[in-house]
Image 1 (cartoon, chains in turn cyan, green):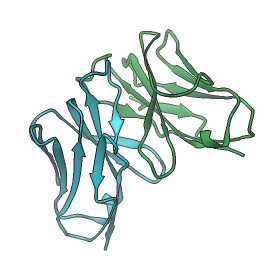
Image 2: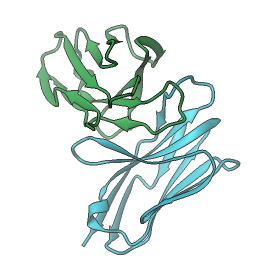
Image 3: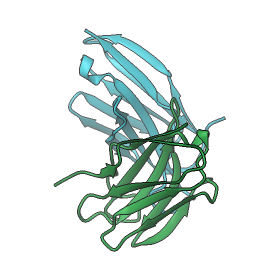
Image 4: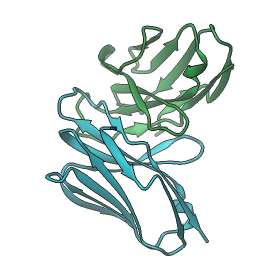
Length: 111
Length: 114
């Protein structure tokens, strides 16, 4: 079992729909990251969370430390949101900024 | 300011050859980490360097090595390439060693071993 599990693996939505991507982890963490990866390979950091909720534009990220679960929500989805969304955690017992990644959720938003 | 830059962007090597991948961090970023991402999977940690010293190593064979230069740029070297080394190699940088600040990724180097 992976230490970081994401669901769903693939998600197809129509433009305008509300989207939720889930991340569960089985280790103690000091921070959780939501990242976006486009087909070219580059990764962009969307959020870094250690508790509660953060919002940036149409994106909202929440984390429940007790339940070891985080969600990424996209409101009013748009075709340009199509990408792979990756959850990554900073484990408590590792030093520095080493991250452990989930396998990603491929999101396709159709017009 | 330029973002994290990696070179080359794409390369093809033959089994048994050696490859060097390069990463230039954002100005002021002293921490550089390397990750390997095999198609369809999440990235796997290879190395972290901070202030020119190795500060972490993932579960990769000794064929993988890296170093960081005085200007904080970094090289990842892979010897005796295997087909399974075909992957996207990502460089990630941040200002400090600790995890308290935003991490920035490069566009990656796509390595194909034939």
